[in-house]
Length: 229
Image (cartoon, rainbow, N blue to C red):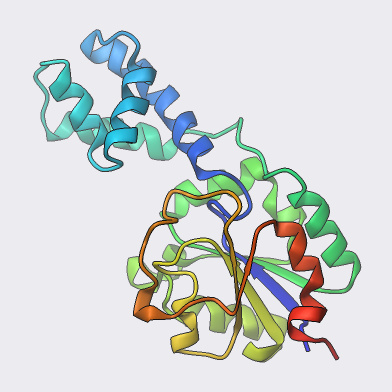
């Protein structure tokens, strides 16, 4: 029955925290240049550990330096536009993707996030060399297309020319990755081994995944989980 497996990107194929650290390293240079802040990288990580929101504001306030919205916008732009050259797939992920493709399974990625930012991640990870189709939901017209909107899924299923029940979506985020079942009967799998940034969120609509796996390698058991023609 299963003909395609579609993956989330952040904290499913690679650790998003590594992207965060990469961005903070870039921003720390600006903090030193514009505000004379030393050890900006460590301070950004500490602020993020305390609260993932408004990290740049928190560091600047802690350092008692004057700043305005324009300064924050510049720091945010540097973070979002940096090239994350040091991010890598979780161990074993590339081998799993290769094995699935060799097994004749169509592969895709559906990811939320700002288009330019996600494109840089996809390029750095060379995602398109492993999968057949990538959709960044914002590229469809804005944040309203982010998961659990069914639009990206409909487009990918149409591209693969398959029905929802012939596909699996693998994600990590309870807040968005599994609520697609509200709109279509696609099979869903939650990957929990890596404890992503959003692991503690409530399940949207109370919809839980069909299967929970510890390691991405377990997805190779898709026939046992869901069957195959």
